[in-house]
Each structure stands twice: as C-alpha cells, then as structure tokens.
Length: 285
Length: 285
Image 1 (cartoon, rainbow over the protein chains, first blue to last red):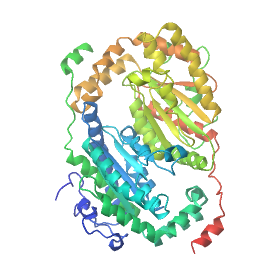
Image 2: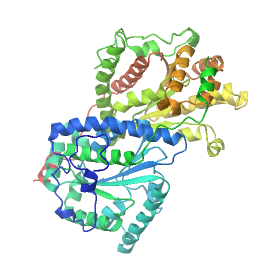
Image 3: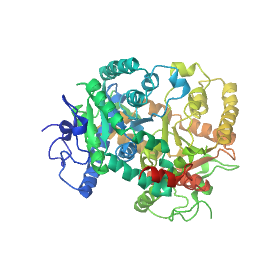
Image 4: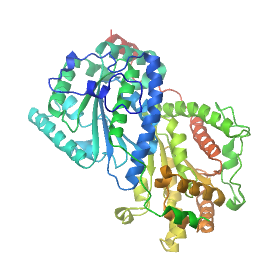
C-alpha cells in the first residue's frame, strides 16, 4: 500500500479508490459510502484532527523548500453542485494549514472584463506560487459545465475548451505543480435536505440563492456534463477524484488525504541552509 | 469598559492601553509586559482558544453581511523587526478564521516592476474586498522604515510619503474599511534569542536570513523611524497599536482582541434574506 505514510486510519489508500479511471461512470458511483475508511462520523472527525497535523507539517516543509528555490506546489481544484461542501473543505481542511501557505480563489460568475478574454485568462492569474497549496473553489471547469448546460457558448467552443484545459494543466504540471481535481459527489436528496436546512435557519439564509434551485432542476444535465469532463480531462498528470459527499466528514477526510498523499510523494526534507551557520552564530555573540 | 463583549478574560480593554496617543514614546514602552491581562502563558493560550471562537463567528457575520451589499471590511497592518512574530499572528490568530474570509499579503522586497511605480501601487491592489479581513505582513510602511534607514529614497520623498499614506488610508476608511495598524514591539535581547534558536534548529534554518542581522545592527535607527511613523501617521481613523511582543502568547491575544473589538463595534446581525423564504421552501417540496 502506498501513500498512507503517517496517517494510520485508512484501511485502503483512498486515492486509488477515488481516482477516475477508464470506463468511469458517474451515475454508478454511490454518494454515501466511505471508501477506504471503516469508522463512523466520530472516528472520522478524530482522524481529520490527526491528519491535520500531518498536513500542516508537510505543507510547511514544501513552503520551506520553496524558499531555497524548489518549484513544487499543489493546485487543488474543487467542483460540485451547490451545498456539496466545497466551503467546508476550505474551512475544515485548508483551515488547518498555515494561511501563509494557502492561496485560495473562489471563482464567481465572470465579470464583464473577464468575459472579454479567453476563459483561462482569469484562471491563469491565480495559479499557486512555488511552495503554496492553491485552491480553486470552482474553476475553469465551470466553462464546460454551466457553459454546456446553459449553452453559454456554442458547442464547438465547448469542445475546444477541453483541449485547452488539458494543455493548460499540462503546462502547470511541467513547471512543478501537482494538480488534484476533486468533484464532490452529492445525491439530489441530500442536496434538498441541505437547502431546506439553509432556509430553516436565519443564520444561514445568506448562504442560499434562489438560483441554486434553478441549477438543481437541471441535475441530470449537470451529471452528464461532469461525465463528459471526466472522459475528456482525466489525464495521468492531472487526475480527477470523485469523492462521495453525502457524508461531509468523509469528504473532508478524503480530500485531506489527497493533499497528504501528494506531499508525501515529494519526499520533502527541511532545506539545507545556504549560509554558514557557525559564522552567523558568531555574529550574534 | 467597552469593546470586551464576549471575551471574558481581560481586566482592562487592551485597545485603549495599546493605542498610540499624543506624546507617545516608543523607547519608554516595555516589550515584555501584558497590558490588560493578568494571567500567565498557559492562561493566555486558553484565552486565545476562547477568543478564536468569538473572532470566527464575528468574521462570518461580517462576511455574510457583505454578501447582501454591506461594504465594511478590516485591514490589519503588521509591522515589526524580524522574528517579532508577524508569522505567528497570521498562523495562530488568522488561522482560526475561515480562510474564505481572509485575504493575506506578505509584501517582500519590491520587484523591478513594482519599483517602476509609486510605492502605493502594489499596496492598493491588495486592499481587502467587502466582508474580508485583509492582512498585510509588512506594508507601505516599509517605504518609510527601511526606506528611511537605508536611504532608499531622498529625504523629501520620504516626507511626501507620510502624507500620501494618510491620504491613502483615509480613502480606505471612507469606503468602509476599519484600519488597524500593529507594531509588534520586541527587545533586541529577545530577538537575539530567537535568531539563535533558528540557527540552532535545522528545521528552522530556512527562516533565517543573514540580512536579518544586518538590519539588527541598525536597531536604534529603526526604532527612531518607527517613532516618526507614529508621530506622522497615527490618525484617529487609522490608529497605531504598539503591542509588547517578547511574550508571543500575549501579542497574539492582543491582536486577536483588536480584531474582535473592531468587529463588535460593527454590531453585526445575520443579514435578512432578500428572497421569499416560504416560496423557496415550496419550490423544494
């Protein structure tokens, strides 16, 4: 078993179980299972706290290494239907990492200026610097998801974008980025529960947008658009992971693992000083 | 006593004690006291954990309010000599806030492109959006600190900058920003201990830069430059706070309080829905 280094709580490496491979079929994937993890919610939360320490230390090592010239970095792309838990991943997984090592971008509806450029214009400005974990909360994939479902661009332009995305991501990989693409996979029934919960709680009304229900009514079209995304853009260098998201605690634990796994594969040591340590100590005495 | 709302652990509101007023004299300020707090390190850490929950909730309220059009936001400016603990503030104070509500910028030595512009060019691009807590790790004040000490600009240009800074900050305040400027006040002896600690630990070598000792040798000039900064830029709308920083736990607690205090003064409620809640519930049934 690989990639499970300092985390002790997986029965099988979930990276392999969650990665989109050939003949992947989204509609056949459950939304409520917990691949690689046998425990319950409480155990999952304990595991998340344990993994948080591992992730924070590995991230600091990558950051430190970058100060001495290493170019490696991570780009985590998060895509999902509304309420699937992207925000919770950012808060509860990325929240355990030193903010100095995280570069977060939430991509909203494009501005008029952004629409005047190619769809990758605003994306490429936000790729992470060396040593950082960049997180995209929504991304260039919106342009082939809502773009396709809502017919915001002609079919031939949508087609062109898959290739452009693969070319763009390959360039990121070539300059030292580990690209991790995650789709949080939710059931419509669970989404309904979460939307009703938001409507039921005045402290959550601000998180609700009537437009969320408009998109919900196009559920099947979105699932088909995701299926196409996987078929066209799940590459060896920039893989997709489909994470069951009906159980929020599992989705967080799984995404945390994908980051830990990527960092452990870098075999990061603390970088060696590029100055004479003894000489500097003398200067202070 | 004001501004102490949900935090129970202060004996006196530290905002008042730490704010730079008329006749402020930096050299007369201790670096190792704990104004407003009677407890020890362990109690300080407990208080920080308690305050973290208060800060996180208030920040979410400000963020929520901004989604419905409120323009308020916070800009926290951190300035200090090396090792004083700016990074620790970011990690341990801002680290308790949802990353989606924090916009952090660490200003480094200006790039050639940045040097081709006015010193506020790169700064103004990084001011926080509504609902956010923006954090500047170093800032435009470097241009009147190292700028003065190292004579990187002629004296009349340094003079001009104080006025430009006040004008710039007043404009931020006018569009809804609470500006909080913090100088972490360290003793040279404590800095020496911290530098030696970095040199003593291979996992901290990457945090050390021989240039830190070069700046250390100009300690008194930097303190004078800070004194001038306070005299020229401590305004009613954009006050400075000098926080004793020999005890890291106290500095973190004090800065956390300054943020909590600013947020409590906003009297934030959860924003009211701008849609018909009952109608949306019907759509889901």
